[in-house]
Image (cartoon, rainbow, N blue to C red; front, side, top):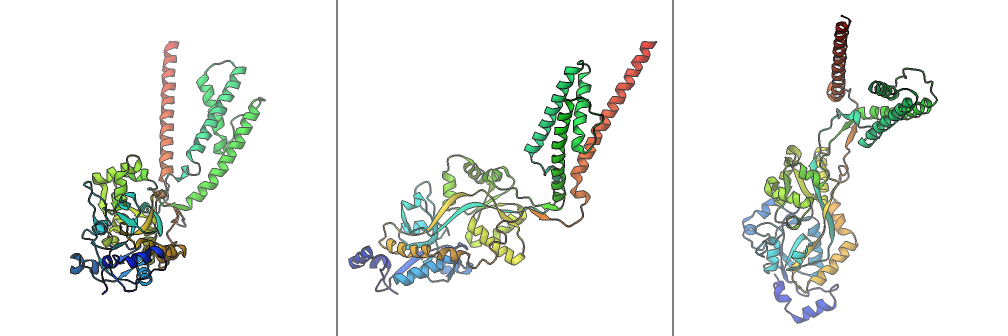
Length: 459
């Protein structure tokens, strides 16, 4: 075992060699480097039995196997710089955030207090950390989003409204009102203004008939009536054909809800828990945002919606998302890699990533502040980035990475349509018939009252 790195870096000859040629620098005698790390399956994979061993829990530098992209980075650095290393895990198993009294936790505290020489990470590059430690050249970029369980596939009973969006439905009824008013106005210029309500209702009934594929009730004799009715009939037929074609297609599709797509959606889903790893840069950033949706989301989380995620038991939280509807706040890459693993095991795509992304992130290693070794490490990391190796390492073992990247919101349905899938139509029909029955009863009552009053008058 070589001398500790801190002793080796006191040699002025080594410091001069590092300053003159950081890219080509190699230690002549391999120093011993102490590196802190925690498990993050996307980047640094540690076994639970190693992290829970008595030696590791006691904070004693030792050697235990690691895997993942960061293991390759560490191997390249140790080979090209010629150093040996031992590993430790921080007592609180965290990356490190600054507390209100100014102290730090996790791996950042270990580097800051010089308990270790460097931290493997990777770490999110943020200003508060940069004040007390040195970041290497960033080598990976990501962003946060929500990982949510997909809804069960089902036919939307209100699917008959879906062929047109609300704007088209609104424009249709506005056009109907406008053309009825135009007809009514033209009619009043030629006939005395008597019984206005009855006449306007008759006009509306005439213009409702073409969209319902019904013939008009009477012959068109007036010149001004022909262009109004003709233009409206053409428009109504076009809309009708479009509606029927789309409705037939929708009846053969099954809709899969993806309700959480934005931060605002997550805020409004107050019955869902928010799963996030605490004591990270992400929780630190969320806590410092002064206003907006992310501020509201963090306030709700701290008021009881947050569930603390620990990367060491990373996989145990997914039943909360799949079975209990919790929302996982995760980096997109980790979500995609989990999708791949889950699809390989089950053949299903039970999760999706929300459309809105937030807190874009650069990731890097961490060294002690003003460490003379940082330029040499940066030179080697730049070569890894420029060659595209790190991205390749992240995704190379994900055989099904694209299988669930964009899960469909609709699927083709070959099953027969049942009552359960068209009850929305039954509701509309029942409501319409109820209103018609009430109106008919009212008309009969009015007619009966009028008959009695006429009988009294004749007496």
